[in-house]
Length: 463
Image 1 (spheres, rainbow, N blue to C red):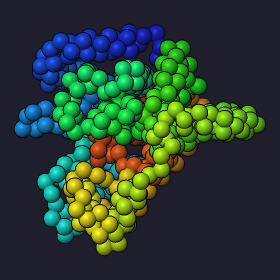
Image 2: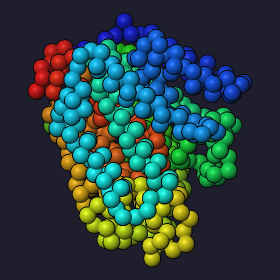
Image 3: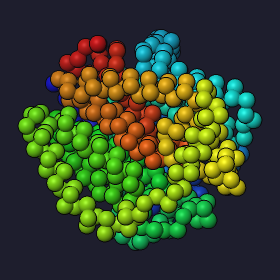
Image 4: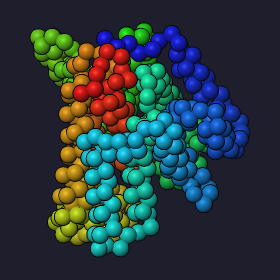
C-alpha cells in the first residue's frame, strides 16, 4: 500500500492557511495592495519555482476577480501561462511533448471533444457574438489547465500537496459560506471582493455563495472536492490528511445544504451512495448502510424542507422553456449544433422564449446545452470522454494503494456529481471556478492513474 508523505509536509497546509488569512485581512484594509500583489505574485513565484505558481493558482481558484483593465479575466491568461510554463518544463526534462499532449486514449478524447466544439463554433453558419468567443476561450483554457496539471505532476509529494491544498481551500470556502449564513447576507467582504456584484447579484434569499460570484455554482464546486475529502477520510494513511478529509467532508456536506441547490443536493446524494458502495469493503455492510441512509432521508427530509423554503418550491416553468429552446435549436442544427457558446445568445430568438434578455441564461441542462451547441457529434464526443475517465477510475478505485484509490474515487465522484447536477444546471459557462476545478481533477486522474503516471506512485506499475 502506498502512503502519502506525511511529516515532511506538515508545514504546507498551515502555511497556506496563514497566508490566506493575512491576505484577507490586508484586502479589507487596502484592497488595491492585494490586487497589485495578485498580478506580481505569479511572476515572482515563477522566478523561484514553477510549483509555487501551480499551488498558488489552485488555492486561489475560489476567488475569481475581474479587473477594470483591457483584459478583465486575468485568470484566463494565467491558465495560458500555466500551460506554456508546463510546456517549457516538459521540454527541459526531455519528455516527449507529443506524449504529453496526445499520448493516451484519455488525451485523444480531450482533443477530440475540444476539436469538435471548436468546429461547431466556426462552421455552424451562425454569426458568433463577441461574447461567444469568450465561451470557447474558456473551454480551451480549462483544457490548458488539464494539460498543465497532467504535465506538471511528477512525484508523490506533489500529489500529496495538491490533495492537501484542495482540502484546505475548500474548508476556507465553506467557512466563509458559514459566515454569510450567520450574518444573513452576502457580507461586506464579498462585495469588496466582487464590487460589480452589488448591482447584478440576486437579492439575498438565504442561499450562501461563499467566495464564488455565481449564486448557483457553489454546490457544484463543493461536490467536486467532497469525493476527494471522503476518500481521504476513509483511505489516507497519514493522520493529518485523514483529519483534513474528515473536516472538509463534514463541513462541505453542511454547506451544500446551505446553498439550497436542489440539483447540488441530489448530486451529493449520488456521491454519498458511491462512497458507501466503493469505500465500504463488505457487501452486507454496504446494504445495511444504504438501508439506514434511505431511512434517515425519510425522517430528515420533512424537517429540511420546512427549514429551507426554496427546497419546497417546484420550478416555475422557466427551466422547461429553456429546455424547449435548446431542443428547438438542436432540431434545427442536429449535426454540429448552433456552435459552442452560442446558446445563450440564440435562445431569445426561439418561439419558446421570445423577447428574453440575451446573453444571461444557459440551458440549465448540460445534455441539452451540448446537443444544442455541438449537435450529436459533440454530445457523443463528450460521452466518450467522460466514459474513458469513468472506466479508468473504476479500474483503480479498489486498487491496492491508497493514493490511486483516493484519486480514482475523487475523479469518479466529481464526474458523477457533475452529471447528476447537470440534469438541472450547466455550470461550465457561468462559473470559471467550477470549470477550472473540474479539469484540474481530470488532470490529476489522468496523470496519477493512467499509463506511465502510475510509475510515480510507490507500489504500482504502469498498466
